[in-house]
Amino acid sequence: MCRSIKTLFNFEPPATDAEVRAASLQFVRKLSGFSAPSQANQDVFDAAVDDVYKVARRLIDSLVTNAPPKDREEEAAKAKERNLIRFGGPQGPSSPMSAKPKAKAKVKS
Image (tube, rainbow, N blue to C red; front, side, top):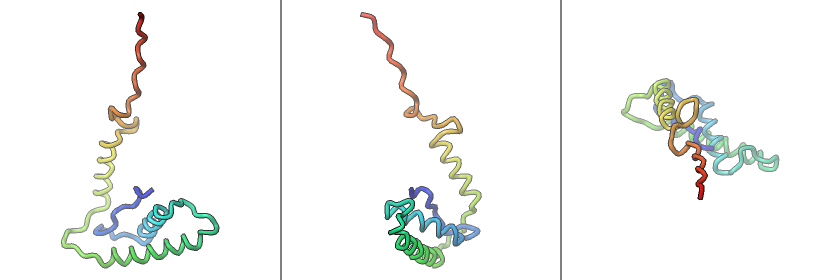
């Protein structure tokens, strides 16, 4: 569930409110165990997302660094390359672990 939470600090352009809110939603989903809460929990769930959003936005806006901002497109290309290496191309992973086991040959006695 939390794999969609991305680093939001020190990017050019800076993280948008929508990106911070999406990360907040994923965080609350992970903590609560709900991808969609019941009606009984909806108000509490939404309030938690709002609270996490406010704190996360304040954190991102307050952090400082001497490092130059990262380029979003460049970082996305690097992530895509890492995923291709890790998971393989469109045909699926090329990992030996993903290969189907070979059928056992019948042995005549």
